[in-house]
Image (cartoon, rainbow, N blue to C red; front, side, top):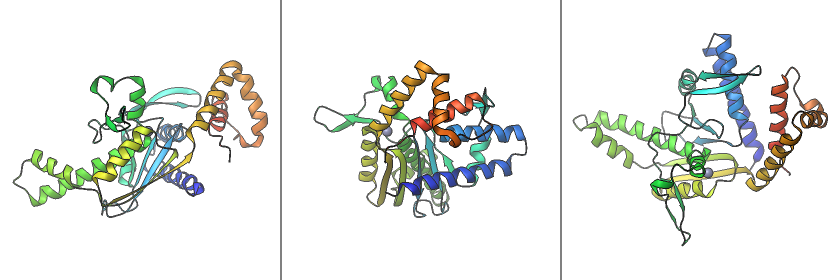
Length: 282
Ligand SMILES: [Zn+2]
């Protein structure tokens, strides 16, 4: 895959989001908070987005679905650091404005479409039992970018089907309409991009989606090999834990001009860690 495409596209989306923030929110503090949220969203471990063909949502030409491993729970109050100070901000208004511009920030759904699947002893996928769903390992698998994005696409697809059926089957009960809407299949093309290869849990789900929607073409692209990332991440965390400010100083020398000026020490540290963690051998 053309990795530059993904990087470029992500930057374009960020610029577009910043533009929306500037245009829609006149309060400068609100603008700063929202931009800090988006920066943190972008600086997370993994980030992914999907582009969809207009056959999936005829009215949503060029819609973007984006998810980050930084913020993926259902919480609308998120903690961001602005000028070195942590604060909780409510992102609901921001998400509403972005959706008006067809940018969907995908977060965990209350009732997901796809059950978490894992390999059984025969190497077949089977449902993760209820009792295991809330263990910490599973919790991270529930909120992978790929999963959140396809869940959101499915959710929106059902929502539009409900709207359509409400018009044609006015005397049907909403619960019946909902069941019918959920059965409607996705058809068209989804290009899904993530930095890292999908994990086995996401793979199981992505395959399930392909099986259930034969008219859907789902293409998945990823940027780095996860193992390599984990190795560097562990190394970086270890170094930072051992040396903290000294290591930041050292990498500041290495990174030199790459470090933007005017950052607080906390932001500088975050930037250096971000550079380390996103290092990818070519
Ligand atoms: Zn995953």
